[in-house]
Image 1 (cartoon, rainbow, N blue to C red):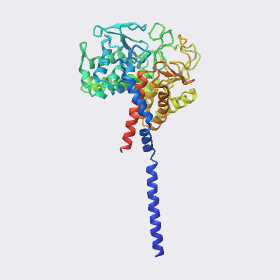
Image 2 (image 1 turned 90 degrees about the horizontal axis):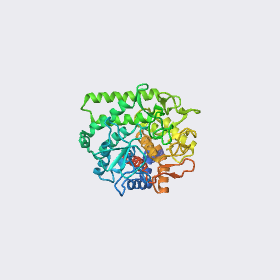
Image 3 (image 1 turned 180 degrees about the vertical axis):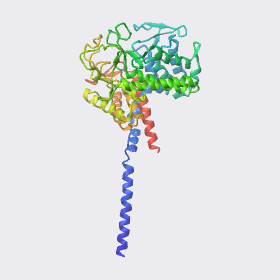
Image 4 (image 1 turned 120 degrees about the horizontal axis):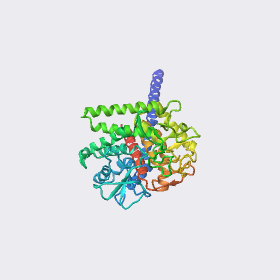
Length: 443
């Protein structure tokens, strides 16, 4: 009898231990705990609501921010998804299609447009089909054409309105005009030396070249180069365009081959295997810089877009994220959104206001932070994304707005306090994060 009681007791103890072990395992499921923490974080809802409010301007216009009179295409491509949540699709579509009114005969796309009364010192172009506006193009950049295609794609993804591609815009369909834009890059901005899209020398995604004071226009002094940002956004645009032309086998085959060629040549010429980072620039001839090793500089924007464009494997992506975290600590920044590090030395640029840790030379930009969080989520790093979004949320709430950039030295905000791209990028990241968390808890 005693032996039976002992055996039964031991059995109950074993079952109890197993039940407790299973309960502990469920309670300590880190993925579920993370998802529940995200869902319980009211800061995400608060900042998303603020982003939506920012992206529903009272005047119905979408200037880049309170300090700007222009509506820029790469900004539009950044905030369009969140803007569509709070604006009529027809309003967004109308504003988006305006860019095609100023498209060049060779397919080039303007940077932005503004009302006739505004003056920003650019070389303007005019259109009979958009008589109330004028457009301008920063010729040092090579991202306008790809940005417009991405904006069209994101509009379609949110609204389901594929008919926009068939709309007649000044004698050509929108799809035909997107093809013209891609062909412009292939025919006019292609470096045979590297097999990549070229551009003027700027810091990462920015629009200021070192040779001239203002720095937004190509001149005889421009130093041409290839970089990862221009080529990554080009590949991202091609990926979207391929979805639209599946029935045209000849075009589909051509652009698929082009995409693969760009990816191969990025790896060949721009990925630094030893440093596990992208090389800032490879020059067609010579560099405008001297006295320092430019290849030591890390570019955030190009890296993030390189990840989203599929240029890197999982181990390389991990290395990039570790580098971003290290730079945040080394620079003293609040967030991982430091656009370049270390900074270019003082007097590297003709514009002496391009000082280290100011504006486009090692500052902290929320709109690139939002894209970085997006990349982390899409590459399976939700835990890291949630960890790193925290400081973005806190400072938006503290400063009551989406500022253009922050100093890494004193953490003070600068520029427009209603920077639409910051609202759009961070808002999109929050949407993705909450969606991912919801899917985890529903399993």
